[in-house]
Amino acid sequence: MLLLEVMLAVAIFALGVIGLGRCINNCLVIESFRAQDARARQALDNRAAEIQASLTLPDVSRKTELDAPYAGYTLVETRRPADLRNERGEALAGLFEITLRAEWKSRGATQSRETKFYLLREGF
Image (cartoon, rainbow, N blue to C red; front, top):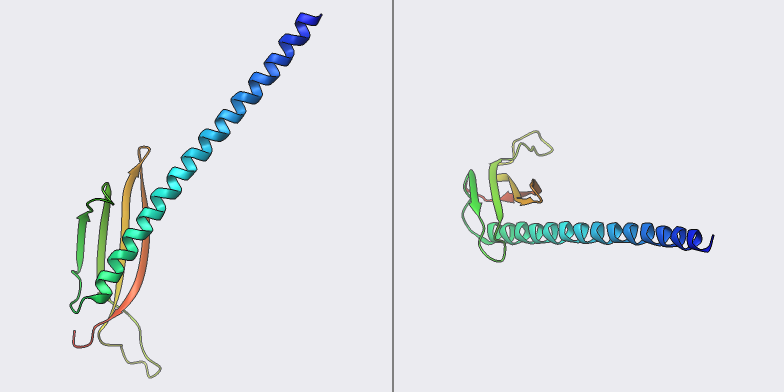
């Protein structure tokens, strides 16, 4: 009887250890996804700052493979005139909608993060 109780206790302990191992593995995977997402947001913020600081308009459409420290990420940019009007119903000239999307592969699946903002360039 004592042997049966010990075997049952070991089995319960083993199930607990296996469950804990899976929890730890899931935490590590989620932390990896979080770090990749944070890196993508940083890449998007950097490119948005570059566009806003430039005096020219960005390309209408562009796809760029990023270098270190963003190796493995692809940046997709699009620009189109903003379809916004003022209070008199007149189209706003020189206002563009910029879309930036970072794409990367993670665990066999393509992940992406996107941001949009408006850019005012008078005279364009």
